[in-house]
Length: 149
Image (cartoon, rainbow, N blue to C red; front, top):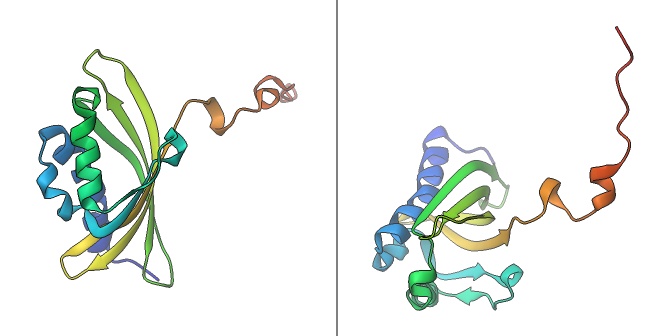
């Protein structure tokens, strides 16, 4: 499936809108982001997936002051599939009130609804290990050098 430029822009804005709504405390607008029965997968953080918009909203309110004060999204990559779903991978940076910063990867499934594009599944994965893994050998191996010119 090929996506029109207008769809790509709408999807990118959808992904970007999340940070604005959360940072502004506009959690009552989550229906602009997610389908009603969205799955918000936090298993990589040791938590059960949240099911539904209300559960995501309640979890954000419950986190309270531990929420980042700023959510930033970058590196948005959109891939359409033949079944009409769209996979979106992006990076998120969260800035806490104390100035510390954390990084996540967002893996989203996005679907077209009568109200526009919405996230039907979101998986958050923390980014804590450089170069995508924990294999220290890859970081310390001998790297060939180029011959002299």
